[in-house]
Length: 117
Image 1 (cartoon, helix red, strand yellow):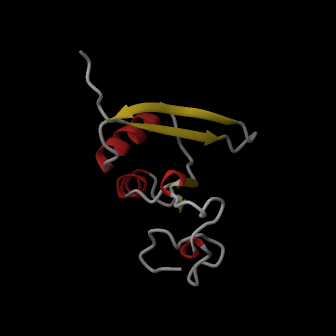
Image 2: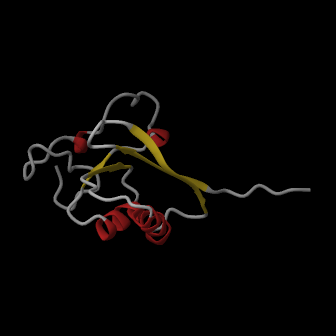
């Protein structure tokens, strides 16, 4: 008899700067969402020619945050709430901490930010 194993799926989508075309850059299964796992995926994308990354969006998972800061220095990370962890009645609303912060008025720094909203 088979067994069920819990795994994550890491998905990377990109938007081309020159024409705005969206594409799936990677889909990989992973045992964890650690910095190492995301780092290996980002490294492979860079080896395949990914460059000029300016903006990334993700949930506020610590593994992806650390990998982004390591592999894409200077890129802005916009952290969005995880839609699967929302409580009933919260659909469609960002938490108050997701608003523009005082230090960076044009950025959404609240989620996971070290300096708060």
